Image 1: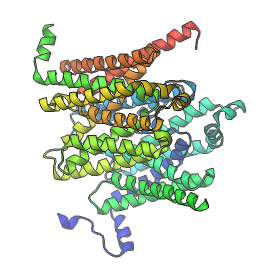
Image 2: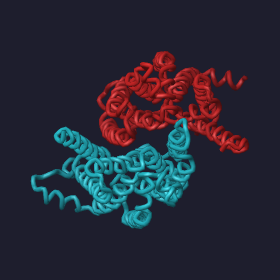
Image 3: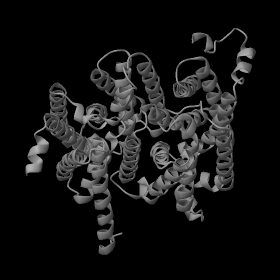
Image 4: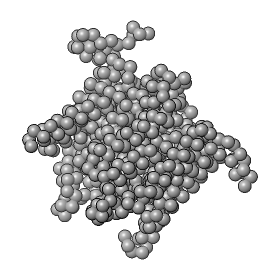
Length: 289
Length: 281
């Protein structure tokens, strides 16, 4: 049994080539690449707009979606997309924090999130499925990704990226200064709803690879790191996508050679990057003084 | 009456009702401050830390309860230390807790591989709670911790309210803003650890947010809202437990959450409606 497990040799090139020996790894790499680009881009806007909590909730909503789809016997990605988009609309309907007092927005998001998780647990219980299925939904699995799934991912990602490219400029304006944007005729509320729906789509996409609980890491960490490095939007977005790609590829590679799950490697690598960037910034500031 | 007697005749139901009420009172009280001070995302992060803490302890063969209390208290202090005025911004919270989740996954896989006897039910009960599985000792610990933390909350409630409503004035009157910030975050952490045992790490956020937000719609007086929040939480827990007892396919934690969320949705909608009729909105 042990002899079948992949071992690292000293030849790095051979090891990397060995990664692509199996079709499932090739599919995993393709899917990971698509998800990383999308998460890096959408995550950057999410961090800029201070909507991490909404992002986390939308990411989690994929779990009941997938569990419900399994229960009904339809394709898992239908469940992911339906639930994430519906959740985005519910969150968007509630007034944003600035417009209401008493932390209403975050209370609603929190309630939506736990209702979603509770329903997911209910669906899994009703399904009487094995609990390993539950773990795969929550924590992801890069093993059984089919080629057809990669195509679906690619189409949805292309749509989402195209949409962001169209609304990117006004969205950035509305994110940085909603008041001024509104007064100069930018449809702030509409943009906010549209962005949440795209965020829901991105979360649904990424959930299929990293699992519902870890999507959030790919959304928030590369973007937060990139924003520490540079404040210029274009450079920062490119960096964010780059970090997301690097973290996903490395995570997949390491997870292949170790017994530990991919979710752990991806989050750890991304977090280490973030800590480096923030300590580097602290040092730079101290030096400048 | 006969139904109630037969339901409460089971020792496991008695324990669930007692422990559930203790957790609910605590969540209701602490939840009020969580919603008021917009700490819901922090509560979210700490609830996931509770998951990682208990699985970490399980993975290394320690007591899950010890792990959950230590982990949430330590991370709560860390989050407080990372932000100005003991309130970290959401990017920092998000980054810390994304990694915490990753660690939790690692611990889950170690636990599943080495210690779990069958199919990682330990992990599932941490995630979604196992309130029907509490023994007498667990119940006692839950009640005592809830009592202790409630006492602390009662002690700091007044200055904390002052601080939450008017930061600047509170500061100038000599309220120890920073210490209160730390204490309140640690209290949220301990509450998360406590509630993990009842409704699970993934669902406790609803018990923190929904009853408090409901109470906030029903009254504007802070102390009345706190009491109401605790009451709503207790009723939601009891109703959820009863529902789950009648319909055995319904997991108790999900039932509790559904009751709390439905109450919130109804009150939210009717207060919107009332305000619109009064012409305020």
